[in-house]
Length: 225
Image 1 (cartoon, one colour):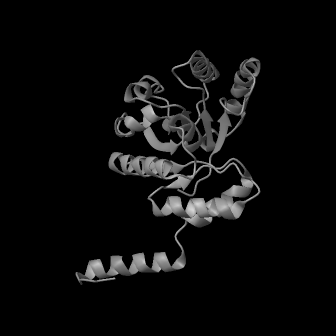
Image 2 (cartoon, rainbow, N blue to C red):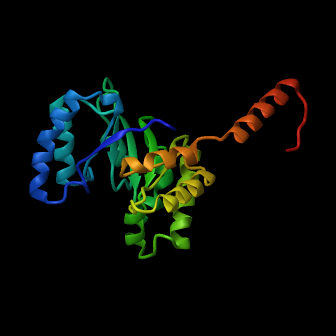
Image 3 (cartoon, one colour):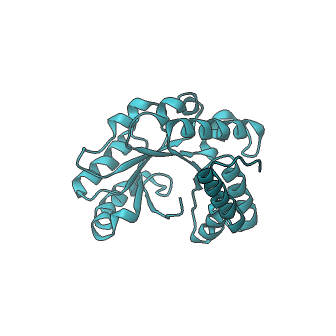
């Protein structure tokens, strides 16, 4: 997954509650004036009044993003209830960031064909579990999400790194996520995009090995590599 999507964030990026109506009004103009194929929109939790107001703003704008990111996804029912009309192209991305969401992540991963990916919300998960972000409990949660996504046939996305001053550490996070089977990593700044792409893009050695395996498979020759 090397396609970068820009995300319009109506949740954490809009701090004061009084600013959210203003953000919703701006959303219509942004969606209407941009190539929506490159846009994702993260709303507030759809189980809250704020989330319902965000959805209403999108419907009234009649300009739908390619991806709708649903935070605090904790059940398959919530995803099914928040699908756009069948004629609209919007796909769903679930953000799993709580113990309850992790408990039901398998059902979430198979909730609807509209679901394309699950983003692991590490910060929210650590807060809910009462653990450190670098601890073993959060690693177990990350593995759980990776397995659920693989079984559901969707992409697992690693959480963003909030330390913009340490791209080397962020790249190491991306490398580990790739080895765990994650398909990508979220970014909060453009400076993070290139290191993330480098981590998830196969290098020349990996591509050459894949080509050799395909060629040997065509010839019907066993190989132990």
